[in-house]
Image (tube, rainbow, N blue to C red; front, top):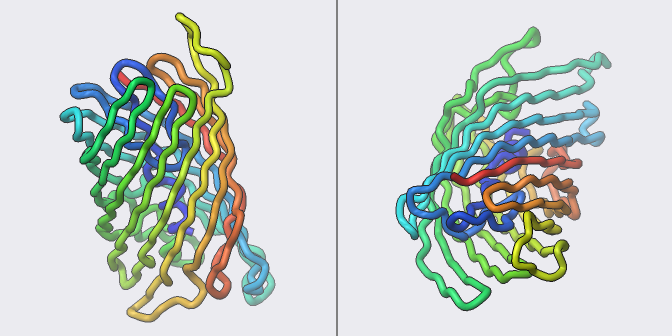
Length: 300
């Protein structure tokens, strides 16, 4: 479940260009710049459900997440970001004796820090094309040793991982006055802590933001309404405990998201719902259910 959290949590920041807020992806990144000397702030809430009825334990898991994101434009090409999550995890399952139990944790999660640098840009009248690699690390700021009345919580239920986990990727963005396309490829190498190692993750993300209103641009428009459609293709390797692979973890998932954004000069209000389109999981790994996202962004 912690793997699900990491990817629900991870880099949902859309950057704004100069003094005017642009449309941006909800569940992935954009290569649009953060103006030099300016900040981007985002507060996002995420609620996700997952579970399975094939293991015999009839597991039902949920993650409620609030993440605070701050970005800063160091130069016109370089921007740095920090993401601090607060998590509330819950797992219900049936024990071998037939008892229904609930295990939960809450608290500060693992912080993510990353830098994004634009290596190519082509600006034409009414459109822009940009390519920007990113490099970052997940810092073990969350507690990874919580207990409840049944003993130590399993690693996926802990607020933090206890490990330092590097990640890297590349983002491609094409934007016009009517729409924006964003694509991202990313790889995360998870390391071991507390004799446990989450599987490495490779993912491919895509997002389309299309202006629904106003249909025609006027001299003065107070805001813009965008429709958003996204996909997230995620492959997770098996987790490992004490060097042994867990056959009931990892696999491949394709998620789809539909949402709306209202964009003003410096602000974005957005919401979307994400559902699994395809899942090929290992053993009795938890299956993704629905995810609801809502957030507010401002640049200053």
